[in-house]
Length: 339
Image (cartoon, rainbow, N blue to C red; front, side, top):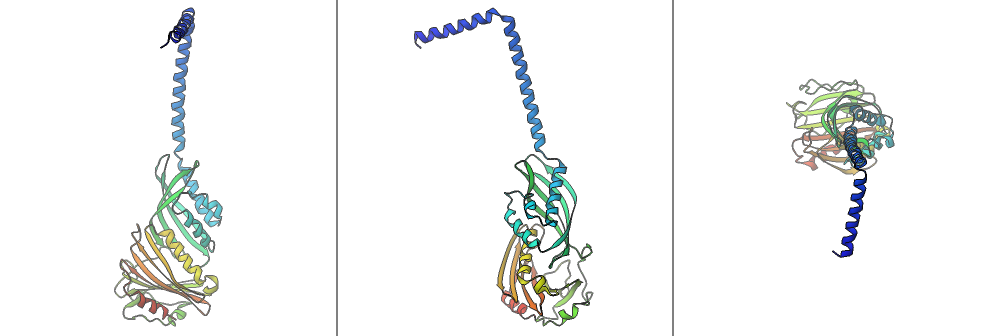
């Protein structure tokens, strides 16, 4: 260290020492004040941090309000407002907007209940819910009750839906009652306004194997479900389903039916869904899908044909549960033989 620099340091120390000796009382008071101020600042910072952390954890009502808005915007068919309730990084973000375009063909009554916060932090919240969706108007739609858990995360200070875990899906009839499963052989009868039209169809299937397990009609539509003889809806291996829509070529349409089927599956299935369109024209459409590793649904595979007859729309579907369709080409030929 040079002598000049050393001398400058000594001079500064002497100056500071002289100033300190000239007013010891004032200095002590100032030091005490500074210490008190530092203590107060630290306490305030800790208090502010605690308040900020507490405010980052959402109130239950804030989460519930967001979920109510999410449902109401579907009913109102307000796509922009609905997308504001979905987290932009949600894996389902792009598919949600596509589904909304399809749901625009429907008038739905949707109710949310049994909301309960399972857990929440400043980063994530899990809210259990029950949702009932009933068709008021529109093409084919399965009324349903869904129980699940919404996973919410904050985005720019606003809590939004990031993911949804569907735990249970229950089919409902037009009155909102659960569709009872397990009709015994010989119990179901095909009777009603549209029954004759379905009975007139050419059905190239083994009459000894398939038994009518369920038949229902509503305004403008009907459904018949056939089970393997000896099985029931509690535990079945195969299912043959026939849908009918009066003037369905105009009110539903082949493309829209297939679009809706794919969209509904995409919305419900939490596992793997492989959906393929095999053929599609103005008079006929054929599709197939497979579901695996879903949390609520059994593994299943289906081939189906949608066709027009006298301006009415018919759909015939063959579904296997927990097994693959061994003779898919043969089943496609059978489906094409329904006329």
